[in-house]
Amino acid sequence: MNRLHLHVNVPDLSQSIAFYETLFGAPATVVKDDYAKWMLDDPKVNFAISERGRAAGLDHVGVQVDSRPELDALSARLKAAGAQTFDQEATACCYARSDKT
Image (cartoon, rainbow, N blue to C red; front, side):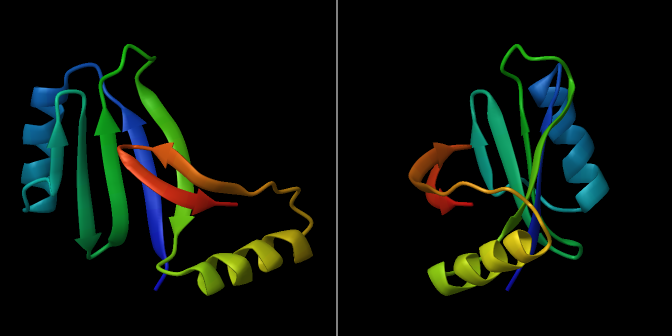
């Protein structure tokens, strides 16, 4: 299963959590002192926000997959489309450790 991943920097985490919980009609699945995340099925997205002293706005976008074979297939499609990629194994991002391309 592929899931879109969006991470947004926000100026006020508490206010933003309240806003997105209302918008999504669901509580955050993960809440930390500087971070919150929703794993939504409709739309199928891993939506994360953080307040870490960076400028407010889009931080990063990705496609999340569930397995190494799915990551390898996605990486191959990126390369076939002409993207220059590099692999990261067991890298930390958003309080999670995962492999990335």
